[in-house]
Length: 640
Image (tube, rainbow, N blue to C red; front, top):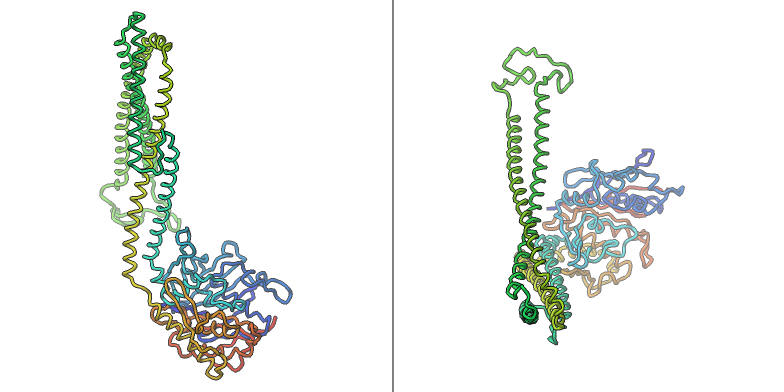
Protein backbone atom coordinates (compact mmCIF):
# COMPACT_ATOMS: atom_id res chain seq x y z
CA UNK A 1 0.00 0.00 0.00
CA UNK A 2 1.24 3.52 -0.81
CA UNK A 3 2.25 5.83 2.02
CA UNK A 4 0.76 9.26 2.81
CA UNK A 5 2.46 12.65 2.59
CA UNK A 6 1.91 15.03 5.53
CA UNK A 7 3.25 18.60 5.87
CA UNK A 8 4.09 19.33 9.50
CA UNK A 9 5.27 22.92 9.14
CA UNK A 10 6.77 25.45 6.75
CA UNK A 11 9.13 28.27 7.68
CA UNK A 12 10.66 31.13 5.75
CA UNK A 13 13.73 33.13 6.68
CA UNK A 14 14.58 36.65 5.58
CA UNK A 15 18.11 37.77 4.79
CA UNK A 16 18.61 38.84 8.41
CA UNK A 17 17.69 35.41 9.76
CA UNK A 18 14.19 36.29 11.05
CA UNK A 19 11.84 33.30 10.88
CA UNK A 20 8.12 33.02 10.14
CA UNK A 21 6.47 29.62 10.57
CA UNK A 22 3.09 28.05 9.84
CA UNK A 23 2.17 24.86 11.73
CA UNK A 24 -0.16 22.30 10.13
CA UNK A 25 -2.15 19.44 11.60
CA UNK A 26 -3.87 16.33 10.36
CA UNK A 27 -7.26 16.94 8.80
CA UNK A 28 -8.27 20.31 7.36
CA UNK A 29 -6.02 23.36 7.82
CA UNK A 30 -7.39 26.73 6.75
CA UNK A 31 -5.16 29.72 6.05
CA UNK A 32 -7.52 32.69 6.26
CA UNK A 33 -6.93 36.38 5.73
CA UNK A 34 -7.90 39.38 3.63
CA UNK A 35 -6.50 40.25 0.22
CA UNK A 36 -2.74 40.97 0.28
CA UNK A 37 -2.22 39.05 3.51
CA UNK A 38 0.19 36.62 1.82
CA UNK A 39 -1.95 33.46 1.61
CA UNK A 40 -1.07 32.73 -2.02
CA UNK A 41 2.66 33.33 -1.41
CA UNK A 42 2.66 30.85 1.48
CA UNK A 43 0.98 28.28 -0.77
CA UNK A 44 3.51 29.00 -3.53
CA UNK A 45 6.33 28.53 -1.04
CA UNK A 46 4.94 25.09 -0.15
CA UNK A 47 4.95 24.28 -3.85
CA UNK A 48 8.49 25.65 -4.22
CA UNK A 49 9.93 23.56 -1.40
CA UNK A 50 8.25 20.49 -2.95
CA UNK A 51 10.54 20.65 -5.99
CA UNK A 52 9.42 23.53 -8.24
CA UNK A 53 12.33 24.08 -10.64
CA UNK A 54 11.57 27.70 -11.55
CA UNK A 55 13.31 30.72 -10.06
CA UNK A 56 12.20 31.97 -6.65
CA UNK A 57 10.85 35.22 -8.09
CA UNK A 58 8.79 33.35 -10.68
CA UNK A 59 7.61 30.81 -8.10
CA UNK A 60 6.38 33.65 -5.85
CA UNK A 61 4.63 35.31 -8.85
CA UNK A 62 6.90 38.38 -8.56
CA UNK A 63 5.00 39.44 -5.42
CA UNK A 64 6.24 42.45 -3.48
CA UNK A 65 5.88 43.68 0.05
CA UNK A 66 4.23 46.99 1.05
CA UNK A 67 7.46 48.81 0.12
CA UNK A 68 7.62 47.37 -3.39
CA UNK A 69 10.50 44.96 -2.74
CA UNK A 70 10.28 41.51 -4.31
CA UNK A 71 9.71 38.76 -1.77
CA UNK A 72 12.42 36.65 -3.44
CA UNK A 73 14.90 39.32 -2.38
CA UNK A 74 13.48 39.76 1.14
CA UNK A 75 13.60 36.04 1.92
CA UNK A 76 16.56 33.74 1.39
CA UNK A 77 15.40 30.31 2.58
CA UNK A 78 12.31 28.14 2.95
CA UNK A 79 12.28 25.11 5.21
CA UNK A 80 9.53 22.50 5.54
CA UNK A 81 9.15 19.48 7.78
CA UNK A 82 7.20 16.70 6.10
CA UNK A 83 6.29 13.16 7.04
CA UNK A 84 6.06 10.26 4.63
CA UNK A 85 4.63 7.27 6.39
CA UNK A 86 6.18 7.40 9.85
CA UNK A 87 9.43 9.09 8.81
CA UNK A 88 10.16 12.81 9.10
CA UNK A 89 12.24 14.73 6.55
CA UNK A 90 13.49 18.32 6.43
CA UNK A 91 13.19 20.03 3.03
CA UNK A 92 15.00 23.29 2.25
CA UNK A 93 15.30 25.74 -0.63
CA UNK A 94 18.17 28.26 -0.55
CA UNK A 95 17.93 30.21 -3.78
CA UNK A 96 20.66 32.70 -2.86
CA UNK A 97 23.26 30.06 -2.02
CA UNK A 98 25.65 29.22 -4.82
CA UNK A 99 25.60 25.58 -5.92
CA UNK A 100 22.17 24.74 -4.48
CA UNK A 101 20.02 27.62 -5.77
CA UNK A 102 18.05 25.33 -8.10
CA UNK A 103 18.03 22.26 -5.85
CA UNK A 104 15.87 20.92 -3.04
CA UNK A 105 17.82 19.86 0.04
CA UNK A 106 16.50 16.74 1.78
CA UNK A 107 18.04 16.42 5.23
CA UNK A 108 20.91 18.51 3.90
CA UNK A 109 21.44 16.51 0.70
CA UNK A 110 20.90 18.58 -2.50
CA UNK A 111 18.70 17.02 -5.18
CA UNK A 112 17.64 18.26 -8.59
CA UNK A 113 14.01 18.07 -9.67
CA UNK A 114 14.27 14.54 -11.08
CA UNK A 115 16.19 13.19 -8.09
CA UNK A 116 13.72 14.76 -5.66
CA UNK A 117 10.77 13.32 -7.58
CA UNK A 118 12.28 9.83 -7.51
CA UNK A 119 13.05 10.21 -3.79
CA UNK A 120 9.47 11.19 -2.90
CA UNK A 121 7.89 8.45 -5.03
CA UNK A 122 10.22 5.85 -3.54
CA UNK A 123 9.36 6.90 0.02
CA UNK A 124 5.64 6.99 -0.84
CA UNK A 125 6.03 3.45 -2.23
CA UNK A 126 4.56 4.57 -5.52
CA UNK A 127 6.24 2.63 -8.34
CA UNK A 128 7.69 4.77 -11.11
CA UNK A 129 5.78 4.43 -14.37
CA UNK A 130 6.59 5.85 -17.77
CA UNK A 131 4.28 7.00 -20.53
CA UNK A 132 4.55 7.87 -24.19
CA UNK A 133 4.20 11.53 -25.11
CA UNK A 134 3.77 12.60 -28.72
CA UNK A 135 5.01 10.42 -31.57
CA UNK A 136 5.91 7.04 -30.02
CA UNK A 137 8.55 6.46 -32.69
CA UNK A 138 10.49 9.67 -31.99
CA UNK A 139 13.38 10.01 -29.57
CA UNK A 140 12.69 11.08 -25.97
CA UNK A 141 9.00 10.28 -26.30
CA UNK A 142 8.92 8.16 -23.11
CA UNK A 143 8.68 10.19 -19.90
CA UNK A 144 8.48 9.34 -16.21
CA UNK A 145 5.23 10.09 -14.40
CA UNK A 146 6.95 12.37 -11.92
CA UNK A 147 5.93 13.63 -8.50
CA UNK A 148 5.75 17.15 -9.92
CA UNK A 149 3.23 15.99 -12.52
CA UNK A 150 1.15 14.41 -9.76
CA UNK A 151 1.44 17.54 -7.59
CA UNK A 152 -0.48 19.51 -10.21
CA UNK A 153 -3.52 17.41 -9.27
CA UNK A 154 -2.77 17.76 -5.55
CA UNK A 155 -2.08 21.54 -5.41
CA UNK A 156 -4.81 23.75 -6.89
CA UNK A 157 -3.39 27.24 -7.45
CA UNK A 158 -5.55 30.35 -7.09
CA UNK A 159 -5.10 31.21 -10.77
CA UNK A 160 -5.92 27.78 -12.20
CA UNK A 161 -9.54 26.71 -11.69
CA UNK A 162 -10.39 25.97 -15.31
CA UNK A 163 -9.00 22.46 -15.78
CA UNK A 164 -8.21 19.29 -13.85
CA UNK A 165 -4.57 20.40 -13.55
CA UNK A 166 -2.83 23.63 -14.43
CA UNK A 167 -0.88 23.84 -17.70
CA UNK A 168 -0.94 20.10 -18.23
CA UNK A 169 -1.61 18.49 -21.60
CA UNK A 170 -4.45 15.92 -21.76
CA UNK A 171 -2.02 13.04 -22.28
CA UNK A 172 -0.05 13.99 -19.15
CA UNK A 173 -3.33 14.40 -17.21
CA UNK A 174 -4.29 10.92 -18.37
CA UNK A 175 -0.95 9.49 -17.25
CA UNK A 176 -1.26 11.04 -13.77
CA UNK A 177 -4.92 10.02 -13.36
CA UNK A 178 -4.14 6.43 -14.31
CA UNK A 179 -1.26 6.53 -11.82
CA UNK A 180 -3.56 7.61 -8.99
CA UNK A 181 -6.06 4.93 -10.04
CA UNK A 182 -3.42 2.18 -10.12
CA UNK A 183 -3.90 1.63 -13.86
CA UNK A 184 -0.61 3.04 -15.12
CA UNK A 185 1.39 0.08 -13.83
CA UNK A 186 -0.35 -2.10 -16.41
CA UNK A 187 -0.94 0.45 -19.16
CA UNK A 188 2.67 1.63 -19.09
CA UNK A 189 4.25 -1.60 -17.81
CA UNK A 190 7.93 -2.39 -18.43
CA UNK A 191 6.93 -5.00 -20.99
CA UNK A 192 4.88 -2.35 -22.79
CA UNK A 193 7.86 -0.04 -22.77
CA UNK A 194 10.14 -2.77 -24.11
CA UNK A 195 7.53 -3.53 -26.75
CA UNK A 196 7.41 0.13 -27.76
CA UNK A 197 11.20 0.32 -27.96
CA UNK A 198 11.30 -2.76 -30.18
CA UNK A 199 8.49 -1.39 -32.36
CA UNK A 200 10.35 1.91 -32.63
CA UNK A 201 13.53 0.08 -33.67
CA UNK A 202 11.54 -2.03 -36.13
CA UNK A 203 9.87 1.07 -37.58
CA UNK A 204 13.24 2.76 -38.13
CA UNK A 205 14.70 -0.35 -39.79
CA UNK A 206 11.69 -0.71 -42.08
CA UNK A 207 12.01 2.94 -43.10
CA UNK A 208 15.76 2.47 -43.63
CA UNK A 209 15.16 -0.60 -45.78
CA UNK A 210 12.49 1.15 -47.82
CA UNK A 211 14.76 4.15 -48.43
CA UNK A 212 17.62 1.79 -49.27
CA UNK A 213 15.49 -0.05 -51.85
CA UNK A 214 14.27 3.22 -53.37
CA UNK A 215 17.83 4.49 -53.73
CA UNK A 216 19.03 1.24 -55.32
CA UNK A 217 16.12 1.27 -57.76
CA UNK A 218 16.97 4.84 -58.81
CA UNK A 219 20.60 3.84 -59.35
CA UNK A 220 19.60 0.81 -61.45
CA UNK A 221 17.30 2.94 -63.59
CA UNK A 222 20.33 5.13 -64.25
CA UNK A 223 22.05 2.13 -65.88
CA UNK A 224 19.51 2.03 -68.73
CA UNK A 225 22.05 2.88 -71.43
CA UNK A 226 23.21 -0.57 -72.54
CA UNK A 227 21.19 -1.21 -75.64
CA UNK A 228 17.52 -0.56 -74.97
CA UNK A 229 16.82 -2.97 -72.12
CA UNK A 230 15.05 -0.90 -69.47
CA UNK A 231 15.60 -1.98 -65.85
CA UNK A 232 13.30 -0.76 -63.07
CA UNK A 233 14.01 -2.60 -59.79
CA UNK A 234 17.21 -3.91 -58.20
CA UNK A 235 17.05 -7.63 -57.40
CA UNK A 236 19.70 -10.26 -56.70
CA UNK A 237 18.80 -12.40 -59.75
CA UNK A 238 18.75 -9.39 -62.08
CA UNK A 239 22.14 -8.24 -60.84
CA UNK A 240 23.77 -11.64 -61.30
CA UNK A 241 22.27 -12.08 -64.77
CA UNK A 242 23.43 -8.62 -65.83
CA UNK A 243 26.99 -9.22 -64.56
CA UNK A 244 27.13 -12.59 -66.39
CA UNK A 245 25.83 -11.11 -69.66
CA UNK A 246 28.17 -8.10 -69.52
CA UNK A 247 31.18 -10.33 -68.76
CA UNK A 248 30.32 -12.53 -71.75
CA UNK A 249 30.18 -9.50 -74.06
CA UNK A 250 33.43 -8.14 -72.64
CA UNK A 251 35.23 -11.47 -73.19
CA UNK A 252 33.98 -11.62 -76.78
CA UNK A 253 35.32 -8.12 -77.44
CA UNK A 254 38.65 -9.03 -75.82
CA UNK A 255 38.96 -12.07 -78.06
CA UNK A 256 38.12 -9.93 -81.10
CA UNK A 257 40.81 -7.44 -80.08
CA UNK A 258 43.44 -10.16 -79.61
CA UNK A 259 42.62 -11.60 -83.02
CA UNK A 260 43.12 -8.19 -84.67
CA UNK A 261 46.47 -7.63 -82.93
CA UNK A 262 47.73 -11.17 -83.61
CA UNK A 263 46.90 -10.88 -87.30
CA UNK A 264 48.64 -7.52 -87.63
CA UNK A 265 51.73 -8.66 -85.70
CA UNK A 266 52.07 -11.83 -87.75
CA UNK A 267 51.98 -9.81 -90.97
CA UNK A 268 54.67 -7.40 -89.81
CA UNK A 269 56.99 -10.06 -88.51
CA UNK A 270 56.74 -12.19 -91.66
CA UNK A 271 57.09 -9.31 -94.09
CA UNK A 272 60.16 -7.84 -92.44
CA UNK A 273 61.91 -11.16 -91.58
CA UNK A 274 62.30 -10.00 -87.96
CA UNK A 275 64.75 -12.02 -85.79
CA UNK A 276 62.06 -12.41 -83.12
CA UNK A 277 59.41 -14.86 -84.10
CA UNK A 278 55.74 -14.52 -83.29
CA UNK A 279 56.24 -17.37 -80.83
CA UNK A 280 58.94 -15.45 -78.98
CA UNK A 281 56.76 -12.30 -78.79
CA UNK A 282 53.89 -14.25 -77.22
CA UNK A 283 56.27 -15.98 -74.85
CA UNK A 284 57.75 -12.65 -73.69
CA UNK A 285 54.26 -11.21 -73.16
CA UNK A 286 53.26 -14.20 -71.08
CA UNK A 287 56.46 -13.96 -69.04
CA UNK A 288 55.80 -10.26 -68.43
CA UNK A 289 52.25 -10.96 -67.21
CA UNK A 290 53.46 -13.65 -64.79
CA UNK A 291 56.30 -11.44 -63.51
CA UNK A 292 53.99 -8.47 -63.06
CA UNK A 293 51.49 -10.60 -61.09
CA UNK A 294 54.19 -11.97 -58.83
CA UNK A 295 55.60 -8.49 -58.33
CA UNK A 296 52.18 -7.14 -57.33
CA UNK A 297 51.71 -10.01 -54.85
CA UNK A 298 55.18 -9.44 -53.41
CA UNK A 299 54.41 -5.74 -52.89
CA UNK A 300 51.27 -6.68 -50.94
CA UNK A 301 53.25 -9.22 -48.85
CA UNK A 302 55.89 -6.55 -48.10
CA UNK A 303 53.25 -4.07 -46.91
CA UNK A 304 51.59 -6.67 -44.69
CA UNK A 305 54.96 -7.73 -43.31
CA UNK A 306 55.83 -4.10 -42.54
CA UNK A 307 52.53 -3.61 -40.67
CA UNK A 308 53.14 -6.75 -38.59
CA UNK A 309 56.68 -5.60 -37.74
CA UNK A 310 55.35 -2.21 -36.59
CA UNK A 311 52.71 -3.92 -34.47
CA UNK A 312 55.27 -6.11 -32.70
CA UNK A 313 57.63 -3.15 -32.27
CA UNK A 314 54.81 -1.29 -30.53
CA UNK A 315 54.17 -4.29 -28.26
CA UNK A 316 57.90 -4.49 -27.47
CA UNK A 317 57.98 -0.77 -26.59
CA UNK A 318 55.01 -1.20 -24.23
CA UNK A 319 56.67 -4.23 -22.66
CA UNK A 320 59.90 -2.29 -22.13
CA UNK A 321 57.98 0.53 -20.45
CA UNK A 322 56.23 -1.95 -18.17
CA UNK A 323 59.54 -3.62 -17.27
CA UNK A 324 61.06 -0.23 -16.47
CA UNK A 325 58.10 0.58 -14.22
CA UNK A 326 58.37 -2.75 -12.34
CA UNK A 327 62.11 -2.29 -11.81
CA UNK A 328 61.47 1.21 -10.40
CA UNK A 329 58.89 -0.26 -8.00
CA UNK A 330 61.36 -2.97 -6.92
CA UNK A 331 64.13 -0.40 -6.40
CA UNK A 332 61.86 1.90 -4.41
CA UNK A 333 60.66 -1.01 -2.30
CA UNK A 334 64.27 -1.95 -1.48
CA UNK A 335 64.98 1.59 -0.36
CA UNK A 336 62.08 1.56 2.10
CA UNK A 337 62.41 -2.06 3.21
CA UNK A 338 64.76 -1.32 6.12
CA UNK A 339 62.89 1.70 7.46
CA UNK A 340 61.75 1.33 11.05
CA UNK A 341 58.71 2.78 12.82
CA UNK A 342 59.91 5.59 15.07
CA UNK A 343 56.63 7.48 15.61
CA UNK A 344 53.09 6.36 16.34
CA UNK A 345 50.99 6.54 13.12
CA UNK A 346 47.98 7.68 15.18
CA UNK A 347 49.36 10.47 17.43
CA UNK A 348 52.83 11.03 15.86
CA UNK A 349 54.62 10.64 19.21
CA UNK A 350 57.99 8.79 19.39
CA UNK A 351 57.83 5.04 20.10
CA UNK A 352 60.54 2.86 21.60
CA UNK A 353 61.29 -0.84 21.40
CA UNK A 354 60.70 -1.60 25.12
CA UNK A 355 58.36 -4.54 24.61
CA UNK A 356 59.41 -7.50 26.77
CA UNK A 357 58.70 -10.26 24.24
CA UNK A 358 61.38 -10.33 21.53
CA UNK A 359 59.38 -12.82 19.43
CA UNK A 360 56.50 -10.33 19.10
CA UNK A 361 56.27 -7.04 17.24
CA UNK A 362 56.89 -4.21 19.73
CA UNK A 363 54.28 -2.02 17.98
CA UNK A 364 51.29 -4.29 17.20
CA UNK A 365 52.30 -7.12 19.62
CA UNK A 366 51.63 -9.79 16.98
CA UNK A 367 53.95 -12.79 16.76
CA UNK A 368 56.85 -12.18 14.38
CA UNK A 369 57.02 -14.58 11.39
CA UNK A 370 59.84 -17.08 11.30
CA UNK A 371 60.72 -16.08 7.72
CA UNK A 372 60.65 -12.54 6.35
CA UNK A 373 57.44 -11.57 4.59
CA UNK A 374 58.56 -11.78 0.97
CA UNK A 375 55.28 -12.64 -0.73
CA UNK A 376 54.88 -9.26 -2.39
CA UNK A 377 58.55 -9.14 -3.41
CA UNK A 378 58.31 -12.67 -4.87
CA UNK A 379 55.28 -11.63 -6.85
CA UNK A 380 57.14 -8.57 -8.16
CA UNK A 381 60.13 -10.71 -9.19
CA UNK A 382 57.77 -13.13 -10.91
CA UNK A 383 56.19 -10.29 -12.91
CA UNK A 384 59.61 -8.90 -13.86
CA UNK A 385 60.80 -12.34 -15.01
CA UNK A 386 57.59 -12.85 -16.96
CA UNK A 387 57.93 -9.49 -18.76
CA UNK A 388 61.61 -10.19 -19.51
CA UNK A 389 60.70 -13.59 -20.98
CA UNK A 390 58.01 -11.96 -23.13
CA UNK A 391 60.53 -9.35 -24.29
CA UNK A 392 63.00 -12.04 -25.30
CA UNK A 393 60.30 -13.86 -27.31
CA UNK A 394 59.26 -10.57 -28.97
CA UNK A 395 62.86 -9.80 -29.95
CA UNK A 396 63.23 -13.27 -31.51
CA UNK A 397 59.95 -12.90 -33.41
CA UNK A 398 60.97 -9.46 -34.68
CA UNK A 399 64.33 -10.79 -35.84
CA UNK A 400 62.64 -13.55 -37.85
CA UNK A 401 60.11 -11.10 -39.32
CA UNK A 402 62.81 -8.61 -40.31
CA UNK A 403 64.78 -11.41 -41.94
CA UNK A 404 61.66 -12.46 -43.85
CA UNK A 405 61.07 -8.84 -44.88
CA UNK A 406 64.65 -8.61 -46.18
CA UNK A 407 64.13 -11.78 -48.26
CA UNK A 408 60.94 -10.30 -49.71
CA UNK A 409 62.77 -7.08 -50.56
CA UNK A 410 65.54 -8.97 -52.36
CA UNK A 411 63.02 -10.99 -54.36
CA UNK A 412 60.98 -7.86 -55.14
CA UNK A 413 63.97 -5.97 -56.55
CA UNK A 414 65.05 -9.05 -58.52
CA UNK A 415 61.62 -9.36 -60.15
CA UNK A 416 61.59 -5.59 -60.82
CA UNK A 417 64.86 -5.97 -62.75
CA UNK A 418 63.44 -8.97 -64.64
CA UNK A 419 60.34 -6.99 -65.60
CA UNK A 420 62.57 -4.18 -66.88
CA UNK A 421 64.56 -6.63 -69.03
CA UNK A 422 61.38 -8.10 -70.57
CA UNK A 423 60.07 -4.59 -71.34
CA UNK A 424 63.35 -3.78 -73.08
CA UNK A 425 63.10 -6.94 -75.21
CA UNK A 426 59.49 -6.14 -76.14
CA UNK A 427 60.18 -2.50 -76.99
CA UNK A 428 61.17 -3.11 -80.66
CA UNK A 429 58.01 -5.13 -81.30
CA UNK A 430 55.84 -2.45 -79.68
CA UNK A 431 57.43 0.18 -81.89
CA UNK A 432 56.57 -1.81 -85.00
CA UNK A 433 53.02 -2.54 -83.79
CA UNK A 434 52.42 1.12 -82.91
CA UNK A 435 52.14 1.98 -86.57
CA UNK A 436 49.70 -0.84 -87.18
CA UNK A 437 47.01 0.18 -84.68
CA UNK A 438 43.72 -0.66 -86.29
CA UNK A 439 40.88 1.90 -85.91
CA UNK A 440 38.71 -1.02 -84.74
CA UNK A 441 40.89 -1.36 -81.60
CA UNK A 442 39.88 2.09 -80.35
CA UNK A 443 36.18 1.29 -80.77
CA UNK A 444 36.59 -2.09 -79.07
CA UNK A 445 38.55 -0.56 -76.17
CA UNK A 446 35.89 2.10 -75.63
CA UNK A 447 33.10 -0.48 -75.67
CA UNK A 448 34.99 -2.79 -73.28
CA UNK A 449 35.66 0.13 -70.94
CA UNK A 450 31.94 0.91 -70.87
CA UNK A 451 31.09 -2.74 -70.21
CA UNK A 452 33.67 -3.07 -67.42
CA UNK A 453 32.27 0.09 -65.80
CA UNK A 454 28.77 -1.40 -65.88
CA UNK A 455 30.05 -4.67 -64.44
CA UNK A 456 31.67 -2.76 -61.56
CA UNK A 457 28.43 -0.82 -60.98
CA UNK A 458 26.37 -3.99 -60.83
CA UNK A 459 28.88 -5.54 -58.44
CA UNK A 460 28.34 -2.54 -56.16
CA UNK A 461 24.60 -3.12 -56.41
CA UNK A 462 25.18 -6.79 -55.61
CA UNK A 463 27.14 -5.77 -52.50
CA UNK A 464 24.40 -3.32 -51.53
CA UNK A 465 21.80 -6.05 -51.89
CA UNK A 466 23.76 -8.04 -49.30
CA UNK A 467 23.33 -5.08 -46.92
CA UNK A 468 19.62 -5.09 -47.73
CA UNK A 469 19.51 -8.79 -46.89
CA UNK A 470 21.15 -8.01 -43.53
CA UNK A 471 18.45 -5.38 -42.88
CA UNK A 472 15.80 -7.94 -43.76
CA UNK A 473 17.31 -10.43 -41.29
CA UNK A 474 17.35 -7.81 -38.53
CA UNK A 475 13.74 -6.85 -39.31
CA UNK A 476 12.69 -10.50 -39.12
CA UNK A 477 14.44 -10.89 -35.77
CA UNK A 478 12.73 -7.76 -34.39
CA UNK A 479 9.35 -8.90 -35.70
CA UNK A 480 9.79 -12.14 -33.76
CA UNK A 481 10.80 -10.21 -30.62
CA UNK A 482 7.78 -7.91 -31.00
CA UNK A 483 5.53 -10.94 -31.34
CA UNK A 484 6.95 -12.51 -28.16
CA UNK A 485 6.56 -9.25 -26.20
CA UNK A 486 2.99 -8.83 -27.43
CA UNK A 487 2.23 -12.28 -26.06
CA UNK A 488 3.82 -11.34 -22.71
CA UNK A 489 1.76 -8.14 -22.56
CA UNK A 490 -1.40 -10.05 -23.40
CA UNK A 491 -0.72 -12.51 -20.56
CA UNK A 492 -0.53 -9.60 -18.06
CA UNK A 493 -4.13 -8.74 -18.84
CA UNK A 494 -5.98 -5.45 -19.20
CA UNK A 495 -6.36 -2.94 -16.36
CA UNK A 496 -9.72 -2.88 -14.58
CA UNK A 497 -10.86 0.48 -15.93
CA UNK A 498 -14.46 -0.04 -14.85
CA UNK A 499 -13.74 -0.54 -11.15
CA UNK A 500 -11.26 2.34 -10.97
CA UNK A 501 -13.74 4.63 -12.72
CA UNK A 502 -16.59 3.57 -10.40
CA UNK A 503 -14.52 4.10 -7.24
CA UNK A 504 -13.42 7.61 -8.23
CA UNK A 505 -16.88 8.64 -9.46
CA UNK A 506 -18.53 7.26 -6.32
CA UNK A 507 -16.37 9.56 -4.20
CA UNK A 508 -17.18 12.49 -6.48
CA UNK A 509 -20.92 11.81 -6.22
CA UNK A 510 -20.59 11.57 -2.41
CA UNK A 511 -19.24 15.11 -2.50
CA UNK A 512 -22.12 16.34 -4.69
CA UNK A 513 -24.62 14.69 -2.33
CA UNK A 514 -22.96 16.44 0.61
CA UNK A 515 -23.23 19.95 -0.85
CA UNK A 516 -26.86 19.58 -2.06
CA UNK A 517 -28.38 17.93 1.01
CA UNK A 518 -29.58 21.29 2.38
CA UNK A 519 -29.97 23.02 -1.01
CA UNK A 520 -30.65 20.76 -4.06
CA UNK A 521 -30.59 23.71 -6.48
CA UNK A 522 -26.82 23.93 -6.14
CA UNK A 523 -26.48 21.00 -8.57
CA UNK A 524 -29.16 21.40 -11.22
CA UNK A 525 -28.06 18.45 -13.39
CA UNK A 526 -30.11 15.29 -13.74
CA UNK A 527 -27.26 13.11 -14.99
CA UNK A 528 -24.51 11.63 -12.87
CA UNK A 529 -20.84 12.34 -13.22
CA UNK A 530 -19.26 9.65 -15.40
CA UNK A 531 -15.65 8.83 -16.24
CA UNK A 532 -14.95 7.09 -19.53
CA UNK A 533 -11.39 5.80 -19.45
CA UNK A 534 -9.49 3.19 -21.49
CA UNK A 535 -6.03 2.48 -22.90
CA UNK A 536 -6.17 5.56 -25.15
CA UNK A 537 -7.50 8.33 -22.95
CA UNK A 538 -10.25 9.59 -20.66
CA UNK A 539 -13.13 12.05 -20.48
CA UNK A 540 -15.42 13.17 -17.68
CA UNK A 541 -19.09 13.77 -18.37
CA UNK A 542 -21.95 15.31 -16.42
CA UNK A 543 -24.84 13.40 -17.92
CA UNK A 544 -24.36 13.60 -21.70
CA UNK A 545 -22.27 16.82 -21.47
CA UNK A 546 -18.52 17.13 -21.10
CA UNK A 547 -17.65 18.41 -17.64
CA UNK A 548 -15.93 21.56 -18.95
CA UNK A 549 -19.02 22.85 -20.78
CA UNK A 550 -21.17 24.14 -17.85
CA UNK A 551 -20.74 27.54 -16.20
CA UNK A 552 -18.37 28.63 -13.45
CA UNK A 553 -20.27 27.40 -10.37
CA UNK A 554 -20.86 23.91 -11.77
CA UNK A 555 -17.25 23.69 -12.91
CA UNK A 556 -16.14 24.72 -9.41
CA UNK A 557 -18.30 22.04 -7.79
CA UNK A 558 -16.98 19.47 -10.25
CA UNK A 559 -13.33 20.33 -9.47
CA UNK A 560 -13.99 20.11 -5.72
CA UNK A 561 -15.69 16.75 -6.32
CA UNK A 562 -12.67 15.60 -8.34
CA UNK A 563 -10.26 16.45 -5.51
CA UNK A 564 -12.61 14.88 -2.97
CA UNK A 565 -12.86 11.69 -5.04
CA UNK A 566 -9.06 11.41 -5.31
CA UNK A 567 -8.59 12.08 -1.59
CA UNK A 568 -11.18 9.41 -0.86
CA UNK A 569 -8.95 6.82 -2.64
CA UNK A 570 -6.11 7.29 -0.13
CA UNK A 571 -5.07 4.03 1.50
CA UNK A 572 -7.35 1.87 -0.62
CA UNK A 573 -5.79 -1.22 -2.13
CA UNK A 574 -4.33 -0.67 -5.59
CA UNK A 575 -4.55 3.13 -5.58
CA UNK A 576 -1.66 5.61 -5.27
CA UNK A 577 -3.04 8.91 -3.98
CA UNK A 578 -0.80 10.28 -1.17
CA UNK A 579 -3.56 11.71 1.07
CA UNK A 580 -2.63 15.40 0.64
CA UNK A 581 -4.70 18.21 -0.92
CA UNK A 582 -3.68 21.89 -1.20
CA UNK A 583 -6.20 24.45 -2.53
CA UNK A 584 -5.88 28.20 -2.92
CA UNK A 585 -9.43 29.57 -3.37
CA UNK A 586 -10.26 32.21 -5.94
CA UNK A 587 -11.85 35.46 -4.78
CA UNK A 588 -14.78 35.00 -7.18
CA UNK A 589 -16.29 32.79 -9.88
CA UNK A 590 -16.90 33.38 -13.55
CA UNK A 591 -20.64 33.80 -12.99
CA UNK A 592 -20.05 36.47 -10.32
CA UNK A 593 -20.88 34.49 -7.16
CA UNK A 594 -18.36 35.27 -4.43
CA UNK A 595 -16.57 32.33 -2.86
CA UNK A 596 -16.78 34.28 0.35
CA UNK A 597 -20.44 33.27 0.64
CA UNK A 598 -19.92 29.65 -0.43
CA UNK A 599 -16.72 28.50 1.19
CA UNK A 600 -18.19 26.73 4.23
CA UNK A 601 -20.44 24.16 2.60
CA UNK A 602 -17.80 23.54 -0.08
CA UNK A 603 -15.18 22.75 2.57
CA UNK A 604 -17.34 20.87 5.09
CA UNK A 605 -17.33 17.55 3.15
CA UNK A 606 -13.52 17.54 3.34
CA UNK A 607 -13.68 18.05 7.12
CA UNK A 608 -16.14 15.15 7.39
CA UNK A 609 -14.00 12.90 5.16
CA UNK A 610 -10.82 13.61 7.14
CA UNK A 611 -12.64 12.96 10.42
CA UNK A 612 -14.10 9.64 9.29
CA UNK A 613 -11.06 8.27 7.42
CA UNK A 614 -9.03 5.53 9.14
CA UNK A 615 -6.05 6.80 7.11
CA UNK A 616 -4.33 10.05 7.99
CA UNK A 617 -5.39 12.76 5.51
CA UNK A 618 -4.41 16.39 5.24
CA UNK A 619 -6.08 19.30 3.46
CA UNK A 620 -4.56 22.79 3.35
CA UNK A 621 -6.91 25.53 2.12
CA UNK A 622 -6.34 29.26 1.69
CA UNK A 623 -9.28 31.67 1.43
CA UNK A 624 -10.79 34.90 2.67
CA UNK A 625 -13.64 33.86 4.96
CA UNK A 626 -14.66 30.62 6.67
CA UNK A 627 -17.24 31.43 9.30
CA UNK A 628 -18.46 28.89 11.87
CA UNK A 629 -16.39 25.95 10.56
CA UNK A 630 -15.42 23.46 13.24
CA UNK A 631 -12.95 20.57 13.56
CA UNK A 632 -10.25 22.30 11.53
CA UNK A 633 -7.01 24.15 12.23
CA UNK A 634 -7.24 27.90 11.53
CA UNK A 635 -4.15 29.92 10.61
CA UNK A 636 -4.98 33.63 10.48
CA UNK A 637 -2.90 36.12 8.51
CA UNK A 638 -2.96 39.90 8.58
CA UNK A 639 -2.71 42.27 5.63
CA UNK A 640 0.81 43.48 4.77
